[in-house]
Image 1 (tube, helix red, strand yellow):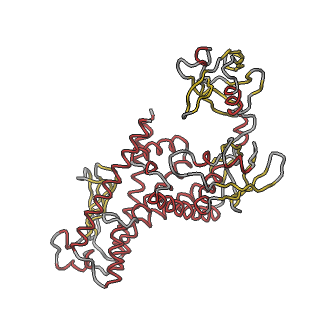
Image 2: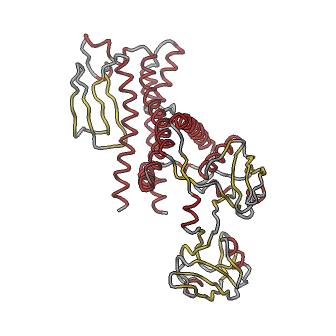
Image 3: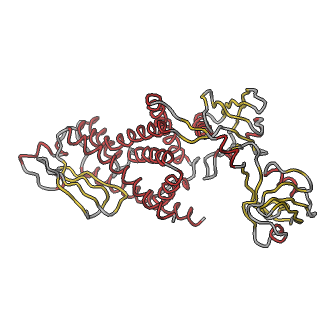
Length: 455
């Protein structure tokens, strides 16, 4: 059933992004007088094509491999050109025209992202307040975060929702690892907490950076549930079941996962009386924790996975919709596009410095998975997902790697400086290097995708 959502969502995602990108090249080329021969969505031999009815009779085509597309223009380097149309060949255009045509593709992706964010903010985003608690022995705990703190500003920027808080925390961390966070406590007092992330490798792996800072979402009336029971564990032997709600351990009320962990580790192997609630009613289980080695440390465990949830009626009451008028949505959409673009470039830069792990590079399988999840979550989530991928596609194509738009733009900049095109030998060498780089990047992305699927 997931594939019935994932495959169409992925095809829609790639189809929209590739079409917009190639349309940018196509539209500017035609406006600047360059003859377009073919506009293809997909790579490979077209399985469908149709000729335009104008004088140029552009061929519009669909090809079987959806990862990409292209705009084929009249060019003397690719075949003989009728003398009457030489002036319309791409290679005969002044460098500024060639630059504009090539740059138009990535620019179209950024414009699309701005429009998508505008649409998303106009429709409205389901959101939750930025209520948090601190994990023990983390920067958030050191900074003094308390259960139920509501984040209202990060580095002076107002926070409207939990998602805003997550994004702004990462954005500010990239600028300065000591982040100023203003919160409103459960008692209604406003105070500023200084979150020092200097010694935390926030981006070194795929773990949630928000959690690595020591923060997690919180909601009133939080309850602890068993998310899973390990085979042959003390919990399984005692009759524990997945989705058991843990009420008490040795008559001590349980409010958070840390309560369970603390009591189990302090048990020293003595039998605990665990009161749980399930569909059939409340029952008591006698569980004797066993000593296990976890990450090189011997601790007592029950073999129970833990998760925290609030009752559905509480969660529903907290939910609100972030919605803006048309003008405000446009402004917010453009700001969001700029913010995500800058943050993505910073993250990409840190990949090269080694601060961000190469495992964060994703390929088509991960994009397909997330497109399916976004589609299942609702229209606004899918629109936001499209915007992020559109920005990523724009940035990727602007990398100064031959074979990509950015590589061609680099050649044109060199041409503008030296007053003549780069030599054919340099261009061919650059293309070989670019092909190797893109091939290596694709192999790495697919490897990461497969590792995620295996995990």
